[in-house]
Image (tube, rainbow, N blue to C red; front, side, top):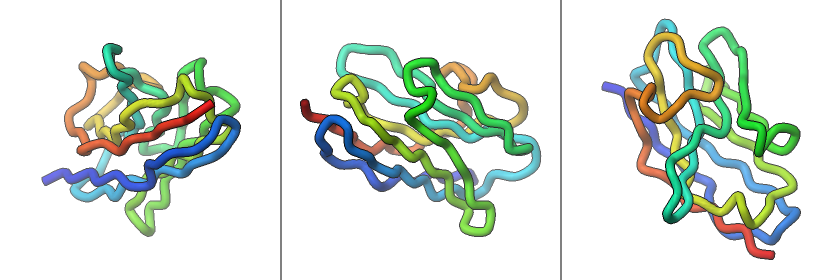
Length: 123
């Protein structure tokens, strides 16, 4: 049973930073872990992903500002978000893909979702 539980969302001013965490259980073998976001009225988009071999990939909109990482000892996935912009405001979701995935993946590739955590960036 795969379980993904996000934490760390909140409100911050533009230019600030937040770190999201996702507690991961039940994932093994070949997989990808990813962060998606969805703003009101927009499609869910992949912003960052990391494969089980440690390869990471980012959406162009967050390259150089966001960093994805995982702590295997703690079974936790992180998303460090720096230089936040109002357009980063969205619900952020942790996701798991069993097997190979694009980096970052499309929503249709995802097998498991977390419940989401809200990030709000004010100008």
